[in-house]
Length: 218
Image (tube, rainbow, N blue to C red; front, side, top):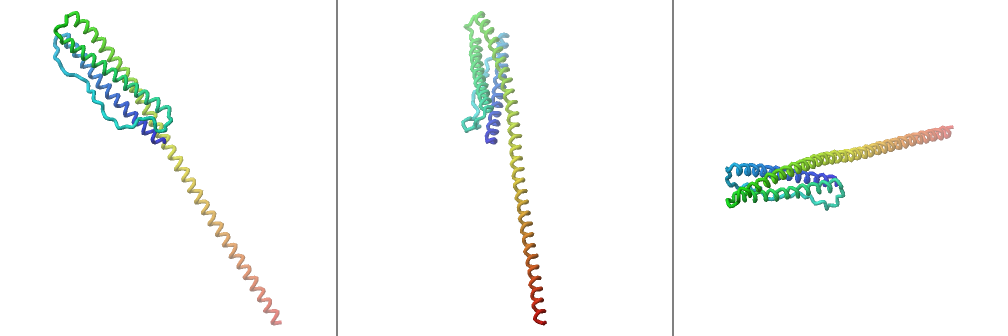
């Protein structure tokens, strides 16, 4: 059971690493968007495709908590990882909306007033996105550290359990050896007593025969 739970926590740690990678990607995109907006303000805009990679990486790790495991730590951490992943998706969606606004800026039909308003909105959007990403990075980093500690704790407990089992087996083997030694000792003492008794009986018989022989000679 402990090994299964340890595997679960290790898989959950991989999930947090994936979230970390996604956050790095979205952070890079936001920086590109920010630069794009600055270029637009300087009339140096060149349309580029900076769409964030939306491909979902396949993850074969089994993180389902329905394996008869009643562990509050695991259930709590998997909820945290799910929330972070959900929040990352929201940030990606908001970033995609920023892309649309940036594309709108290239529309020559917009008046300068409309463009100025859009610039102000975009600057606020970028600021909010950066704050959201930093917050998620911190949450994910804390989760990863907690998972590392839990994994290490489970490893130590598993090793301790293995050592206790090994120690118990050694005690059983030692007791078996003591029992065998005692049995051998008892058998030896029993054989020795039998030999002594036989020797004493033989001596008595010999003495009896000698006495009878003496009486006959008389």
